[in-house]
Length: 183
Image (cartoon, rainbow, N blue to C red; front, side):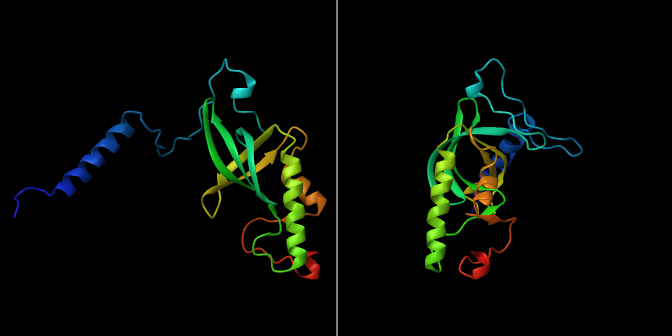
């Protein structure tokens, strides 16, 4: 039986020391109590195409995005520029709307409406100049919740609502699309 600490205990303690030292040395910007944390602005002197675009007042930073795939009527996959030279690929769930589901549709009407909503979202996003803002983690993980705009559409969610292909959604349980009231 060894007299000293186990290898696991030594590695765990060493990891804690490393993390604490890295954070204290400025490796991470850890929030400090009572100090407001704001993101640093992008570096200046770069072209407008490589910098975060400005968003409407009160919405936080906006990020240029390249459409990769439309998943359904309220979700798309995009390559998002989070900082000059830094991109992430993520699924973006549109804030404030619920569109019918194509996969798992409970009736023919829901399926047809889902296809129409997906096609409408694709047309809106293919206008280009996509920018996402008010980005937050989605409740399901693996995607983000955000507002989206294009060079032709100031708010993609509002455009889908105006077309009747989506309905307002602020979280919680979503209703079905097969009843007369949903049509």
